[in-house]
Structure formats: structure tokens, C-alpha cells
Amino acid sequence: MISQVKRLWDMVLDILFPPSCLACTAALTGTRSELPLVCDACTQSIKVSTAYFCPACRARIPVGQPGCHPKANYVLAGATSYEIPAVQSLIWRLKFNRRTLAAGPLADIVSLFLDSIRLDISQSIIVPIPLHPSRLRDRGFNQSELIARELIKTRGGGLCTDVLRKQVATQPQSKLDQWDKRERNVRGSFIIANPELVKGRDIILLDDVWTSGATMNEAARLLKAAGAKKIIALVVAKAG
Ligand SMILES: [Zn+2]
Ligand SMILES: [Zn+2]
Image (cartoon, rainbow, N blue to C red):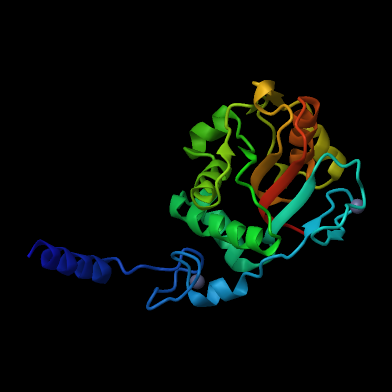
């Protein structure tokens, strides 16, 4: 009896609030998508990458091959492209529309990518790029941390949010057009709080979007100096 009432109630809810695609808001009916709460058309538009990228020259680095700039502080692993409208929309809705549910499909895009490059993160430390406390207060959550928490549920890895801290409130990088301005903007903006947590460990630095790489480079530089072994910058979307 109770299950019948619940089923009826779910039907009423579906009629009042029909589930819609988190990317394009189309009604979700009979979706077979691999991504939760994303319609088939949006899911099919999201092409998952099959290689790494060099953060210094943006060259594609096939799985198993050495990077072209071995002195770079990290290797870039971008799951998909920020040019894809459905990807942009999911990230935008998570960050600026506070649709925290969007962290689920974004983590699943990353998970599909980990399959495609055969990367096991279960023994790594996952460090989401932190927000400055004032930005965190405004937004109410750190989008990279939400994505990391969803990802860890299926892929393992140890979440570590108390090693890298943002101590200087910087301008949004998206407002600065040149690399040297972006680099100056973030230089000295992070500190390492507990270096013993990363010493000798493989680190996955996780962020939503990679654009110039200045933020990632600064974070990776500090982690390297603190004794981190290998650093992979894992991002949902690579811009440009
Ligand atoms: Zn859609
Ligand atoms: Zn290179």
C-alpha cells in the first residue's frame, strides 16, 4: 500500500516538476544516457578526450608517451572540451546557478575519460583547486570539491582539502586576457598547509576548467616544492 502511494506521489511530482536535462533543460523522457540527468542529445555531443596534453605547448600527448616539455610542473588531463555547449552549460549551471546536481554528470564525464586513458586514481591524493574563503562564502560551495567528491565515489582516491589553501583573493582569471597578467594575478595566492600529506605522493589536482593554466601551474609549483611526486591536472574541460 505504502509503495503504491509513493508511486502515485512520484507520478504527481513528475507531472508538476518534470525532470529536465541539466544542460539544455529539455524534458527528460526515457533517456538512455550514460550521464545522470542529461538528455541523449547533450550526452552524444560531449566527446571525451583520449590523450593527455602538454601544459606548456598544448600538444597532444598520447597515452604511454613521454611529454614534450618534461620540466613542466604537471601533465594536463582534460576530459573534454569547453567549446561544447552542453559542457559549458553544465559547468555554468553548477557554478553560477547553484545547480549542485550538475556535479554528478560532470564527474561522470571525468570518469569516462579516466577509462579512455586507462588512468587509475585510486592510490592518488585528490586535491581540488581551492577557492578563497570569501568566494566560497559567496558561492556556498567549491565546485571542484563537489566534482571530486562525486568522482571518488566510483573511482576511489583520497580527497585532501587541507593541503592547498587560497590565501589571496585574486581577480577572476577570465577577466584577464594575457598569460603574464594571469600569472601575476595568481602568483603567491596559494599556500601549502600540511606538506607531509603530499610528500612523495602522486597528486591529482582537480578543477572544472583549464584555460591558460596559470592557476594550475602555480598550485603544481607549490606542491612540487612540498615534495609531491607526479602531478596530474585533471580537469573537466579544456578551453582553447
Ligand atoms: Zn540536453
Ligand atoms: Zn610541450
